[in-house]
Image 1 (cartoon, helix red, strand yellow):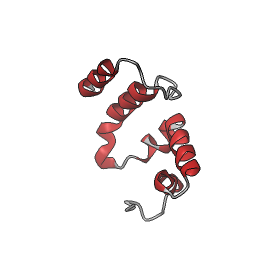
Image 2 (tube, one colour):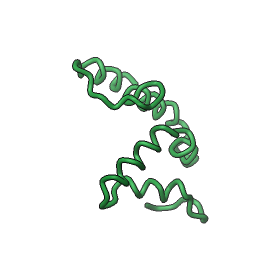
Image 3 (cartoon, one colour):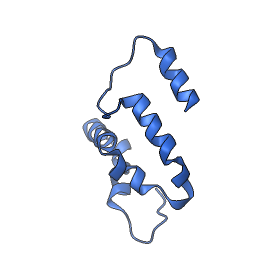
Image 4 (spheres, helix red, strand yellow):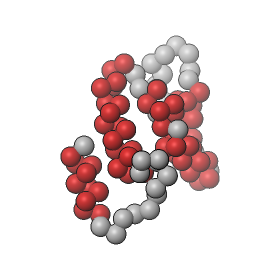
Amino acid sequence: ITYERKKKSENVIELQMWHSDDIGSNYRAKKFSIWDFQLRILDNFSANFLGLKALASELREILFGENGKEYGTPDEHEPEYEKIIKA
C-alpha cells in the first residue's frame, strides 16, 4: 500500500489485513470495515477521490444493506446487478 500522507494511518494498515494468510483475520477486517464504513473507509479517501464517497456509500448499501450487516446472496441476482450498474 502506498501512503499519500507522511504519517502512516492505522486504518490503512487495517486494510492490509484484508489479504493476510489468516482467513479469520481477513473476515474480521472486512466485516468491521463494512460496519464502521465512515471511519474505516470513507474518512480515508484522499482528496483526489472525495467525489466518489457517495458512490462508495451507495454500493455498500446495495451490497450489504442499510446497516451493513446483510451478507446473504439474494435468490434473484439481476435486480442487485441492475442497482449496481445504475449507481
